[in-house]
Image (tube, rainbow, N blue to C red):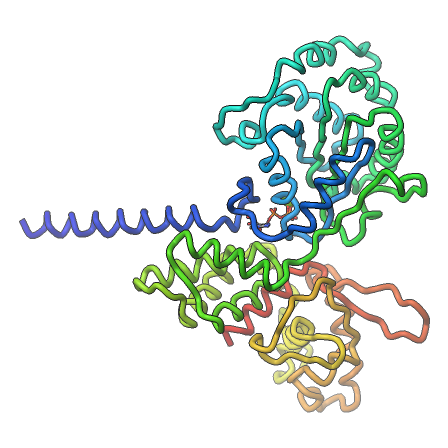
Length: 444
Ligand SMILES: Nc1ncnc2c1ncn2[C@@H]1O[C@H](COP(=O)(O)OP(=O)(O)OP(=O)(O)O)[C@@H](O)[C@H]1O
Ligand SMILES: [Mg+2]
């Protein structure tokens, strides 16, 4: 009798846990791009610019920005918002040359053209798109080319296939940065854009990829200026992040007070990915304690879990970067982590931030720093190197330069000097690493 009531209590607890997990999954999606208009926040200006560029006949688009900033979500939402917009989407992979990318696109055209966003993204939702309009076109794809034309697809053969397209179509090439690593791909697409713009105005190519600068993805070409719209997706500002967090929390009937919210958003550093992740774990902690408001303790629990579950690659890079140097005196053993922590917290214009509470808007550009600028803020002072007096500033320069090497995980990148008088400057190679280090500091 006793054991059976014990069992049912266990069962109840387990099913309550499961129900909680399910609610959290529905509200927060740190691991998946957004597909749904209702779960998408902010980005008004970018949505507007993207829509306008898509509407413009002969215009092609590059949507670029940092890793995890929300590029795929933004592109998804454009089609979810307007189900009458025809599109197909491929995700580029490495080693796919120009011809293979186009084969990939043609396969997608045959299987998905005329289907709505929801059926393409795996959702089941009835579509009212006139798929029939494309039937003749699909048949034409099969017969348009000779076998030899099919072997190596040239711009001319691609135009021959696409020319009879009956309606406006957007072709999305997501993760184009991966394909653009091959210089020929980037050059061939640059040529293609110009030709498409002149001869196939009903087609829009939408390139999506990680880059600091659009020319990293598409070779520079003066004639592209008028037919190529470049949209950089920046980090989210406080307001966008705040709307996102509030929206997600509302779905699990939670709120935050001003201070905890500001802290969480500051740690998220403009990345919607971190807002989802920190929000989810903080909500989990609060709901487990049956709170209705997220407390500082919940946030702390969330940060701990976020660090455990964050991208494995970031943790690996961080460990590699900060491994102790056995040749340093014992007190300077953790010199590399001190240097990286100073770099993560560094803000230009002497506006050095000691605690996350004082951070305000996330910066939209990866901050640059020189050895000299970091010097005053590294807590292991010259004294730790007392066996080599006077060598300390050089040690900082050396550490920064070593953090750009693969032996220390290539966590920093050297910025080319403008003149021989300007000091050597560095940036974080992966901006998420900065956020990761700030999270670690918060726990200290
Ligand atoms: N506007 C938004 N509103 C709500 N959540 C968002 C928004 N944009 C992005 N996200 C969330 O942020 C995370 C990253 O988004 P997404 O995958 O779209 O970024 P990405 O730039 O395509 O990343 P990658 O560079 O890895 O391809 C996801 O968890 C997604 O759910
Ligand atoms: Mg993406």
